[in-house]
Image (tube, rainbow, N blue to C red):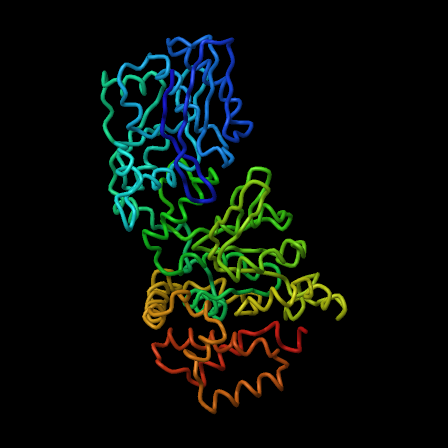
Length: 521
């Protein structure tokens, strides 16, 4: 007696088809699962056995062999409980129709036969949706729909592919497959949900004063530049950074689905949200490990840098992070992806993020503050600032000083500019960049320009060259700051709706190289 059930699993942020084959032989009772199952998959025999019996079906006292194909890829998680149970019932003739081969089954089983939610439902449903250059896996394999736990139905329906049927129990699944009961496909208006979810709980208008820091964040958002804020405690660095996602360009539906896939695989998708339609903001604690930041672990999962994909990764008190943790960010920031190599597999997670960091200027935090005296020696300040390595600092385009907020700004009743009005200017600047780079496959914003692109798209006149020469010679700016200044100048020009880079654009960009000046280094 043999049966074949179609299921799915995730590898990285993408899914692949898994065929759950069941073979039952008239031998001594045994339950064997093959196909590189992990601990959770091997333990499914206990859940499946109890679920079948408690759902008033007969569990066979024979030798049961479960094969998860392809057998050379490690299978993880409890999502195979439902297809294994249905496979056993189909192989023993307890499901009268052969429609079980026409549906994709996903779900964990409780001991009483209820179907529990699983992580990764969205990428699995997307796998069986239409492809860009074909009909998709579902149509080519005769798949009529995907059966998922009720809690995952809204998330899976976002794929807009094969029909999604929400199920609550093993008994309900069998009745549906035997056509003795009907389940309506879960339908949603993805455009309406996307528009409704595009709301942020914070706004730039809540920040009093700090006009220079707000301007720097606007420039960073317009060009996709990494930024670091340096200032004394209580100056508003964290408050400003938390509002950075609200002025980033509007998220597209494609970006929203891409971001949601990562959170779905990690099992971090909120219960009340089937789609992440706002720019993610991740702020890990400074005690985080390498695996927590870039991903990994015994069962590899995406880290904070991938969970911030298409959004902001904020490192508060960046000087307190372990140096080796900061150094692992260098390659992901450059490539936009994280590759985790393990003995049995290699996984790649996307991580195109804006890095925002904040730190005090010295151990006590009051170096350069007009209201408080600093007791740190120059050696202590130098040691504290050197916690950020040169190669990592080289990947941060904008350094801005955030002074303490003045009392007149705190007490002011003047209405501050909202995030929406700032975002309008940022959107306009990004559109100019997309048009400029329409023939460049790897460029999507000014921050992604390499040396060759900088020479092509950031030409400057003799006056600007003279200013750059003076900045490097007199203010102690490093040579590596040259390209960074040109890229930021290009963004400032885009915000000003200027085709060419002018002297004032370069002057403002030079102002954003605080940590390169001899005052610090």
